[in-house]
Image (cartoon, rainbow, N blue to C red):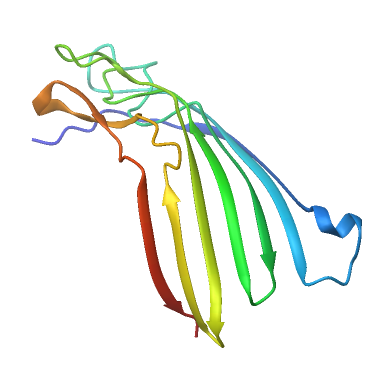
Length: 166
């Protein structure tokens, strides 16, 4: 049976910054060295609920902060290589904000590093590839209740593919 856990109006602030460092030296270049960062701050709480004691608790999977930053080297219509760092704040895995058995109430804060690249072969055809979780960090992003524990996120993963841009 599904139960509405409650009302959760949220307040959120988002920030983003971006700059092409090579613009410091030239405005006409097709080569770029882009740096960026963005942050999202979230304040979400239950303001009302038919469940006793739910008001004031934090909804599941609502971290207080998410931060992403990166650097991209690219040449227009030829290649792009990006190194990205992504940090997600700790969060509850269920609306009650309580642990279940040996499963802790919080999914801990985690940070991962990713590498991505693409290269234009001809016209609209690109090859792409990368590595997710470049440092092979062990981290947790969700809960697997049947095992009574946090479920580890993916190990280092390599990927490759092709894309045709219309």
